[in-house]
Length: 197
Ligand SMILES: N[C@@H](CCC(=O)N[C@@H](CS)C(=O)NCC(=O)O)C(=O)O
Image (cartoon, rainbow, N blue to C red):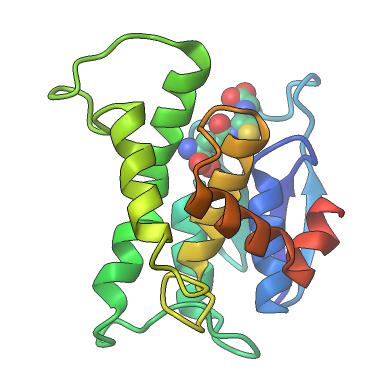
């Protein structure tokens, strides 16, 4: 089965493109333009209710949102490359924690760092930028080289993609563990295939 990835090279869809390369499964990129209204057609809104990319079609199924797509693909496609601890694997909880942390905390913290809006730590689900950065720095200092040791998982992909973006755009400070992790991420062959470098 060929997965269709709704994609634009200037978008978060590049992360899911990289995931498909890591998984080494068959896929097709379906270009979606920002300007020509193709993200707002009824057909596309069936695939992605927010009218956003990335989104995928897998046979009859569609999935949108980076973390949902990553969870879906890494759970379903385990050959040739397995990127996800199974539901009974003791590492599953830690895997889910950091995978979901990307959407729940890293993404909004990046947005806050860029747009510089004020929130109350107690009320904002992500707390604040400094706490997110400190929590990441502490956890990534223990990544040897990945969150699950030698096993590169979809959690590294999603978190690593976000960290590279945040450092590249100077949204987060270049703390030593963040920087070292970002450099390891950028050395992955599948990352280079998609992102260049
Ligand atoms: N929460 C979504 C965010 C997706 C998103 O914001 N995608 C942008 C491109 S990076 C988009 O499609 N923007 C077009 C629009 O909102 O019209 C995810 O993580 O996948």
